Length: 219
Image 1: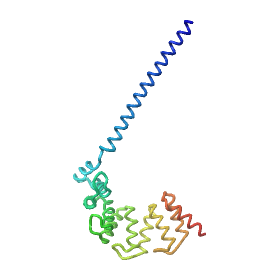
Image 2: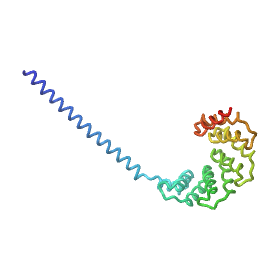
Image 3: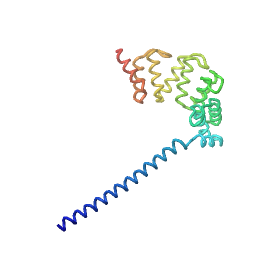
């Protein structure tokens, strides 16, 4: 009887200890959740990269000037302002940040924050392409193909696109395949078209799979 009573007392103490541990755990867990929520809210509603980017850009940092241009262009953390976007892209380009030339070309092509200019579109795509920027190289090929700021030259457009494709640009590979398939700027060649579609697909270009399927169904 005494032993049984002792065991019951011990079990009550153990259960009390477990309950206390569970209570402590829940308190700790609740604290962690509250801290995580506080961090999330701080990042979401308090942290704003605009001020720090503006400070660096104003101090002459070309990369920050380029990033600031994108913040203004996208209206992210600041009101959208194409003129300010143009200003900061132009400043970054003048300070040697070659990707800013690609952004400037896009603004000139759309007439955002500046007067639309095909000549300046071609000029800035050329400057960025000379530095190896893939986006600029693809768009420079399009300029040759469509006659944007330069006379139409499909052969040069194809050569420019294929050079970017051979340097492993997925979008250039897809478009090179398309040009081979249609015979645009080059003699039509579906075998080479398929080759470039496959290259693009192997690099994750989402539109390549459908092109491959469509081309194979012809054979």
